Image 1 (cartoon, one colour):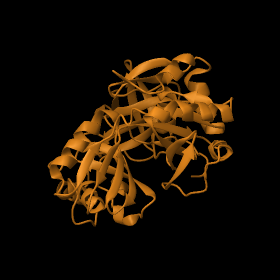
Image 2 (cartoon, helix red, strand yellow):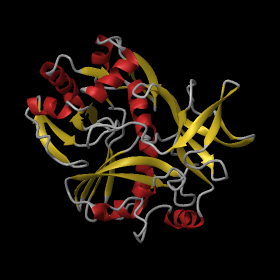
Image 3 (spheres, one colour):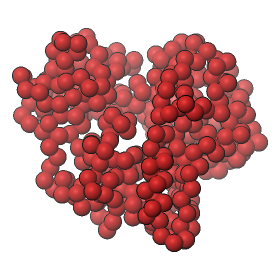
Image 4 (cartoon, one colour):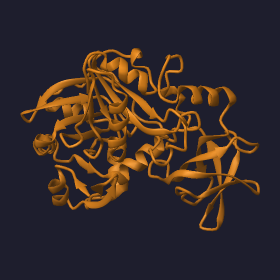
Length: 362
């Protein structure tokens, strides 16, 4: 497995590691564990090393227009200096190859952050479709990414001289610890936060600068990242989005530019949207004890109606929560009670609309 350029820093803090997308990444740290890390982000500030995320660059005349004709969301809705959540869909099936953050630098420059395991495939598809003069470059190992998240994150970065006043899903370039850094107002936690895209060679210096500025800063692993994003109802590719789960089924149609003349999967997704999906992603909240987990079966009465795609214990709500893909049949509407088979026991849960928590203002 690959390792982050910050691996030694994680070892020194007693990190427990786990494989993720072909990378060995911190799951949690010795000084508190998942719940303490989760709480730090909800109430104060935490930092995640998410350097496993992919990085790709599309450049050349018409690069932005090319990306816009491939990926689902409409880059025409934003301008240079803004970022956008978008999807790379399969043209034949409408399934999701990956979900991506696109950084629009200008008409001839788009920087993409896909998921770790899917970077090669996204780059391959874009490269094969690219017109003459447009270059797609896989820069996965060239950059590290640090996510500084939580209500106190603006104050921490301001202490380091960074401008934190830009709006949600916008980015600016800055210098930190001698490194050129892209500071983007994004995140995967629902709290106010920033993602720092840093040259890999400078990752350690930037990490150290953050902790020097605030020695109480909590390092956070993938365990807390998962509980935080599940509380928000944010999908994880490979579970809540996949080649078998379309944006229409995952209720991610807000990330699709439906009026665009072209994007991969447009025809099949428009047809599914018009007909109505046969199944949709919903939130589930346990009515009592019981923690749902991925792949557990969901029943409406005696009928099997779907399965959990992501499930966990909510540290904020102190209750089991889940995302589940359910058939659009009677008994699977908002407010209905369904039952999740948790190790042979049917546990009642209410169908709800995420997010499961209220967070700091974006």
